Amino acid sequence: RERERAKSRRDGVTMTLQSFLKTLKTAKRTYPFSIYNLLICSSSINQTLDSPAKPISDLNLSTLRRILSDPDIKSWKCVSLFSFILENPSLFSFQPDLNTHSSLTLRVLSERKFSDAQRLLKPNILRFSFHAIASSVVNETGFEKKVVARFFNSMLK
Image (cartoon, rainbow, N blue to C red; front, side, top):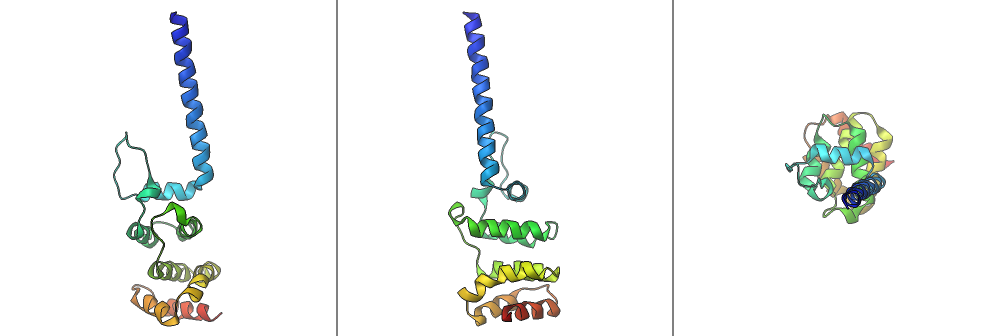
């Protein structure tokens, strides 16, 4: 009888481990590792050891803006996160606004990554008026006039 209990416990541990590995594989497929890791590191909500990490559900527009403007986070990670949010709108309770688009585009332009900036800017040119885009860029602070000029030049291409 003791042997049966021990075997049952081993089987339970094996099943739990298999369930965990299956969940891990699903999470890896669903969220690219660098994006998932970025969200966990940037999460503004302290979590206890017992609570499951849910960085996707914790993300909101102000947290996204904070992540995208953080100089310690590489711009390619910001672009990846931003693209992930745009490609998976059903996972988020918000959509990035024009100001978020503009600030990330200006950041990428200031690093001379013109093709990335062009890709970020294209969808906005069709959705928003020139006046709205210009206003959002003018409201951004901390960027050189040269970068802002490149931004407007990119709009014309």
